[in-house]
Image (tube, rainbow, N blue to C red):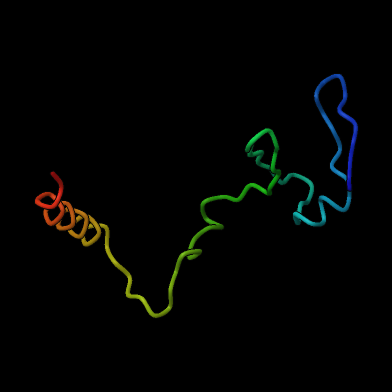
Length: 83
């Protein structure tokens, strides 16, 4: 288990093993997620790094207009099924 001390300014140094595990380098940003009284620390990623993350090679690219139409069609279809 890794630990570090928090300074009076609320700062701490991430242990080398933690930086290595997250692939952190000088100047990188980290993100904190608080869940059920615990904090998860992760490397912050820019939107450009996420490009293609959900890509599926066997699935055709869909335009925004096609997405809007599919959503509208689904809404029209389900409108009659809800009480």
